[in-house]
Image 1 (cartoon, rainbow, N blue to C red):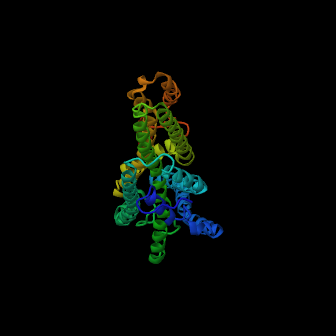
Image 2: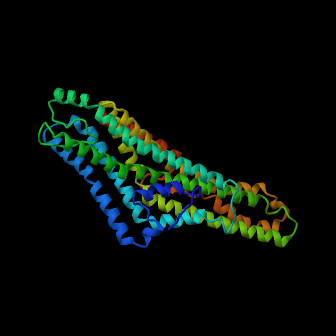
Length: 381
């Protein structure tokens, strides 16, 4: 498994995912049976918060209490998607690790000047986004407990029986609940949401991190292409051109591997993203909450990361031919014939594929936002 050191590529992302038993370390690799048992136990124990939402929804429908389903729908859709993201990442952890290794490898084609700088910057962004999600879960829980009065007021107005002051919807057959038991429920819900939501957000950050590193490598390749014909020696020019073509093929392979990992792990977000965000928006309109606003912002940023990652890879893989046209290719027309293949390949950019709705890019981001608004309009009727 890829084991980054401080300031290496993917250091903060891997470190955070490892803390939550989604990415095994070298020492854990030697005891994989124990690692998968502990990881499976953590996932299983934490999954009952979703069951709580389903039970609460079922009982609300049974009691004809449709007004109170907004938070249930957010919980079911959001938690289900987070669980799917985490499980799928763990299943394909080795493939992600190999992609990390390949992107971090600079032994074959050299290290771009900006690579170290972008690695440090990505580690910072990864830390800030993961921290936002962890703090966001805590604030969401705190706000839900502080909004106990609004919940009790709603119970009286609608003649319903909700357990107030807890984080996620929870059904209880009686009006009153033991304080100690209620505290245990709150602790369990915060823990369970923390096990799934922050790491799933970090997984959504990964394609953007990969795209940024690929972008630096492509800029490096474009600089090399620009200077292929700068020397007079024919053998040297052939050597430079061969090096650039091999480098280009390697970058395309990495971009296609990033596409495959993104499609498998987060491809469903093109559909699920609009559903979850519209449900959160509906929750905000019916019972305004700072916690819901934090949840919505985190989800929107996750969708943006993936869409921008797709746009970066699409633009950069298509722009390689620009540097070739800007080079002194006309000084050696015989050798420049070999560039036709590179130019033709660059005219077909690599894209990050989603499920059903095409490719992740700015266009899809607009579609997701519009779809979110359409669903929100439908839910508020």
